[in-house]
Amino acid sequence: MKEPVTFILASNNPKKKKEMGDILTALGIRVISMAQAGIDVQPEEAGETFEENARIKAEAVCRAGGAPALADDSGLSVEALGGAPGVYSARYCPGTDWDRLQFLLKNMEDIPEGKRGAKFVSAVACAWPDGRTAVWRGECSGVLLREPRGQGGFGYDPAFYLPEYGQTFAEMSQQLKNRISHRARAMERCAAGLAQMMNEKK
Ligand code: IMP
Image 1 (cartoon, helix red, strand yellow):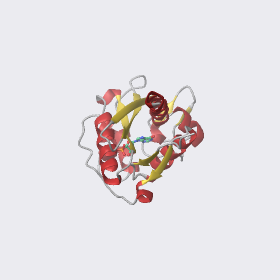
Image 2 (cartoon, helix red, strand yellow; image 1 turned 180 degrees about the vertical axis):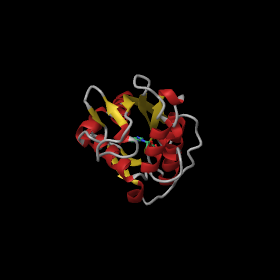
Image 3 (cartoon, helix red, strand yellow; image 1 turned 60 degrees about the vertical axis):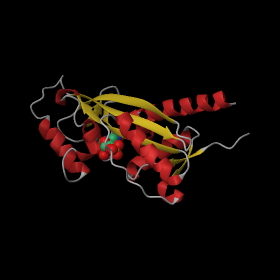
Image 4 (cartoon, helix red, strand yellow; image 1 turned 90 degrees about the horizontal axis):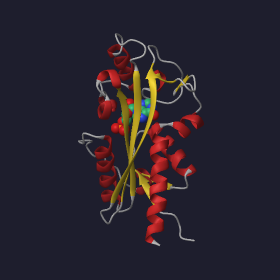
């Protein structure tokens, strides 16, 4: 049987990298880090959509490494804020992830229960040295609490509550988050898409 293709994983965020690595390994996709590939690129995320930014990152890493690359662009889209912070989730305000979480909760102060819906979105893009690219999207819906809850996860996780599980992303186990998250859903589609592409080549 042919060896599976190895992708360079285009992420510098250690927590996201770990989550992506765990999900991809479970799906049978082999990845190496940029450090393992001997490259260090940080392309500007100039796109207006998650898909555009994921593609920009995957293409830049693929060019630098001369090998297939895989990138995700993700963020939180809040209904009452017209989809903000969206693609600007990592840059919503200066400071740390915790500062951005507090800023979000402040902006949501006057929003009543029942109007606090939000979704995490992840776009996963693959780029190949021959110029081909492909992108898949995953979403996970929940509501925003008024106070952070839980110690796990990262970013906006402590405010993101999933009514069907009675927990925030920061309260649930990493295994559960990795099964149901926006990133997991996008990666499942990516794995299915890659499998189909491999079959078509045969
Ligand atoms: P990216 O590295 O440009 O994709 O930035 C994604 C940003 O969106 C992160 O810095 C977080 O603020 C937020 N984000 C994305 N996925 C998650 C998640 O699973 N939990 C919490 N925050 C997330």
